[in-house]
Length: 407
Image (cartoon, rainbow, N blue to C red; front, side, top):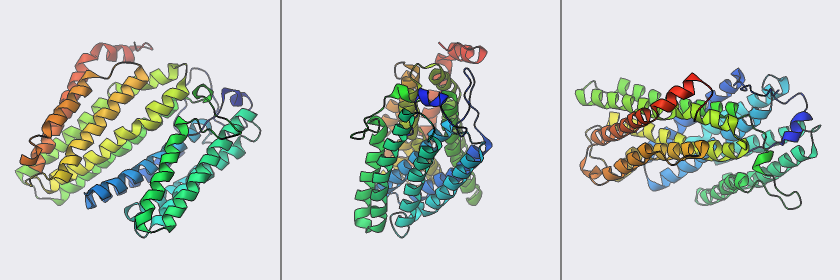
């Protein structure tokens, strides 16, 4: 994650996004163009998991997903500060887009023949983007520059580990990459501490909350879009039997329920909360940088579950299939529950906890159910959660969309 102090804003050069109190920084067209690469990345991840539903395969896809999310969210932080309408910034985003395309191409064989391609693309994006920020802030305050000196040092160290892993054998690659990713994920939590340079505090992170909230919600849309593509493609390629029709309808309803759980009130409530927060950097770090990855991971797993239910509706669910069919909705509900608790400073939503409990109950009969039946049961759980939350927060919903107050 990137950092910049409030002091830096007043001394910034013309590459930084202009800020006006009370306004919401817009998401620009080039940011949306950049996101197209990650539509492909999400597709690659879901297909890679579907092709290897083993424990090791799941571990590989999990690591790759965490890397994809990390490189995307870091870019989201950078474009929160940089002005994408500036020529130099546009060149940066386009260069990152090309790197993201190479990274996405390498995903299916990242642990085979394309390890170095994946590692090189990832490390280049992370370090290159951070070095650009050092250059962009060359006329800014010392505090702002020190923040990016720290980040660049952290990413340079992990970049070496990524490349070493990419050069190594498949047996050692996982260990190197787990170490590299672990260090990177520790960075924001440790405030990018560097001996001699110290550390920052979350209150020094000058983030435009509305923009970052919108960027993350758009990534959720990207992931849900992958679910729509998967269910449409699978249905088009399969037989038009009654059971496939039922699986198709249930998959669509499940996708709608996931959209409803996040977008009906959660995304707007979270956006207003971070915009009005006295410490938006802290909220952005936990609620958007860390917790949103659970939400997106759940959607990716659900997309794989949809394809399983459409391709093999009558098959008796095996352990790997059960893990996907139940784990996807569970990750999604857990991520939403923690996100809403964090940004709104409330208790965990009871509807989400009940939903998680119902998914846990489904573990018991899961081995006796067909894939389509189990998928339908998880859809029912998601619909129950969506309806419950909508009814319980209907008064709050009217306040949110009727005026500025949200409590």
